[in-house]
Image (tube, rainbow over all chains, first blue to last red; front, side, top):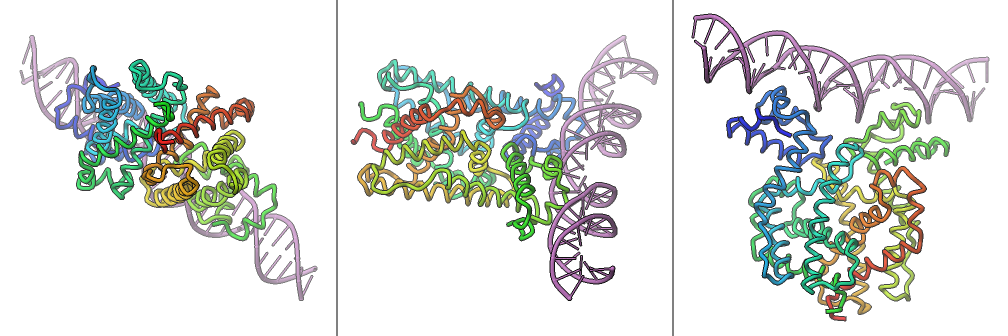
Length: 221
Length: 221
DNA sequence: CGGTCATATGACTGGGTGGTCACATGCCGA
DNA sequence: TCGGCATGTGACCACCCAGTCATATGACCG
């Protein structure tokens, strides 16, 4: 985790560092990513990084367990109670897509936990993040069951995995496909991203949610 | 692609090379994987690799575009015509899980195309493989529509992505979860994998297919 | 002014890599 | 037996990296 020195940094310097670190880790997997490159692009001496973080892993961990989730939570917002479950779920999914489009690098950071790694330290970190995400989704689905929106007989473990992949990576692929670009083009181009406006996002969210709703209730509604 | 020299190699030597290359590339992403390590573990001089392949990428390309698909196709088998669409799809999914359990390293190689990469050469390679896989699944779903098993009004583009993720990565996660292990433990342990017998695979395949069936037909059956 | 402390710096170390190449080995045909 | 050809080999090169550390800078305080 960052040192006090890091927190005391002038805003300009700190955010330059964060921006470039996010760029690096959103484009490269942990072991491919390079501190030297971040140092070059920020024009901050490599030695300085070790005044702010223990090592490369420490910086990475901070970004994907603290910084990215913080930004994402702030962006997505809370579920409003007293709301139809499926309508609210649809909004949730649409917000996720909006985050992907407006903060693609952070969205990518929120998603890297999905790919496995041979390094035990990285693996542990990633799987903890995945588990947390699954647990959150699971409790949301449990609410759906409690509200009668989801068939009470579903196998919740299976369901959570399926739903998570559909509204996560699958929908991301769909968005990229819709934009006619691959991930790195989207990371690089603002104009490209703006082409997925709220209307199109809502349409896609509606269909994705209809898919998982059909899958969960399998014609029993 | 491999040279003639490679094809002329004594079987023992060639398969030693293939085995260790598969191990390396199933455990590490392309840039993390190391020819030097493969050379050490096979006790084949590094120079020899360059008699068989142009470079590291050439070996990687051959493995994921030729060798892994060949093995997978042979393992999965063809769809028998004159078969109920959903029953056949279920069998298809079950075979995929069997492949995952019995050849986890090759299964992993068949799946690596999903993760993005900053390197354009790798990216092109991976996205070509993904597209081919999606096209195959899409045409299968088209058969389903033609046979009346799938609602003719589905958005085939969306549907293909969703189904592909559910029966692919999502189901893989479920299997790992079921085995109580992560990917690398499964790669390493035969005993672990045998715990997912045909009966459990069939049960999981049935549920996954029920999920996508419900998602595709959304209560219209 | 002098001194102390927080911070910035980049040359350096040790290690790993992909790829090359001059040379060694050994088979096969004349 | 000899010569040529396919093949095997590992030391070597240029490169990049994570992480260290002696030194420099400069702010603040007595």
